Amino acid sequence: MAEVSDADHDVCGMSVAIDVVGGKWKLHLMWVLGAGPRRFGQIHRALTGVSEKVLTENLRQLEAAGVVHREVYPEVPPRVEYALTALGEDLARALRPLEEWGDRHRVHLMSAAS
Amino acid sequence: MAEVSDADHDVCGMSVAIDVVGGKWKLHLMWVLGAGPRRFGQIHRALTGVSEKVLTENLRQLEAAGVVHREVYPEVPPRVEYALTALGEDLARALRPLEEWGDRHRVHLMSAAS
Image (cartoon, rainbow over all chains, first blue to last red):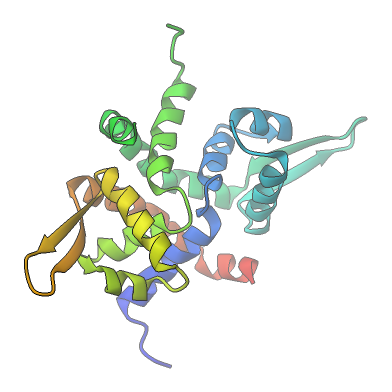
């Protein structure tokens, strides 16, 4: 097997992470759930512009990656809550520097975007 | 003006950052350019699956955000190189913990993805 160079090794780390959080809504979702367990409706209201279908798909993908846990409470009607797992909490911590970067450069970035 | 709660303040940081790096290819691009200045062809070869059109758009968006600098060398034929700006280098550092998260959990994440 060819020697795995540092570059390949690094690519694996980032591309594995991108597979989990790449795409428009995943990072937003991590931010919403980073604030604590939320119900579908709460998440949907917090993310302006996402359809219920796309939100469901994104939540399912995060669940499949083991980052989000979906809890169904046996009530009538049943209550469903989404929360970060330990792996998800670790990811939320790893995303905090990105958020701080956004905060540090917000004025520049918002004027560049307008 | 309504009091900006911590939540709004945090959302601004993350949503501003997401506007820059959200989407499938931006994080990959940050990783490629994090290794140093690259020409268009080198970047295109490093990112399997991206079309030249989408790559051009993504580079332009990163350039507009001030994260990437495009240098045209007056040679025949002209040589064009893309490199991270100081703002881009700061972003690359902010993304390093995400990459480390991917490395830490690579075995789990790759088996969850398969």
